Image (spheres, rainbow over the protein chains, first blue to last red):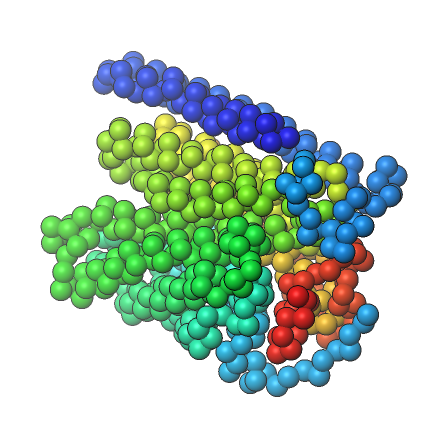
Length: 102
Length: 515
């Protein structure tokens, strides 16, 4: 699980940064002619759609996971009738994953 | 065990108390009062913008400017900060196992500065915007409103610094010696982080306010271009304080979710260490990104890239919180009582607002969205969607312990549905308005711009739904604190286990028997 989290975080950063490089390159090479100004406007909107695609993709994955979590682990789910192993403790929130070797 | 309801104490006994839970109640109730006052201003603004070109509610632009200025100031400094401080006051000493805050009298003084600062802001009703842009705020903003704004903010800033010093000393110096700092609950960690940030950030704004005052008096010309000053310098000083302040508003709400989510998932927090790491990271990164508010002020390319990367560095730390919440819920047996509903709703909207933030931080895109309603939508999605949901979750969580009575789950559901629906409708639509090119802070717009009209009307309907949900919340708070069923203090939601911190908070003068 921790590896999955680490990979997800690295992917998030990579998606955010890589999609910027194209525009950064374009801006460094920019000239002042009207034609290139229009090109840059196109680049900006291209960048916008790239980033919204990235944001919506990651957002859909996280939101989808959350919706599934809410549906699957709600206490009224028939698969979830029996108490969790932590509920046998005096305080279910007081244990720790690290101590139990997860 | 059902505890007998305690005999209500006289109000003056709470008002003049220096005990941490009493000061916490005062902070929380004051903050909620200002929330409803600022909410009324928001309803006026949105109703006005429903009708283009008619001025139904507000007859002139100056009044409109005053209303949105005071709305913003109140929500940020008289609702968000006091409620965070209030819950912090109630829980932090208990979480670090100390009898009170480190400096109880200073704590009470810090609270009582809030009504004074609030009175100055509301009686002045300045029109400077909450940023108080120079040179307008120096040259043109009418007094005494602008001067009252300066003094009001000064008092609120001093209050923030005093309460922050108190939190830092309480957590670092007064915690029980058997409690290692890494084991301190994450809500207390969030308060420690924001307190340290406040101590570093706030003096800069305090200096800027003094410079602004002397500029207004004609003694100096720091930000006055006619006297050789630089208005952009004010923006640097302002955003050096107030970009970190965004995290100062946000992190306590995240900390509150850390208290609620494991409890209602009936299992331990997935990772204490990653929560601590993410708080500290956000505390540091918060100072590396203020320039992204000023891309369009003529900054050079390299500086902009540095600020862009600094801003994006907040993504992994924020992601760690989200993953920590999801991993905590995974494998649990979740009870969706009101606090959990609001906490989960807050996480979903936190992610949406964060995605918008990534787009804002990219400098080419920032030029498109700068000064438009996109920014209004993004900022409000954070403030309402994450901070608002986190705080409301915590108010429901603490309600049985503060009042001794149970709220109505049915009306809390109505509140949740209305608040979630309204937040999405009004603030997502404002993003679209920004892409349609509507500038922020405008009094009116031409009815011929049909897309603006339609989107504004959708946003206003969303705002009314949001407002109605808060009317339900207010009525529910008042009615059920007096007429609600007596709560089972050991386990108000039937989750099992021991609720150490809120139970100890219920009995403020009887020691912390939870340990």
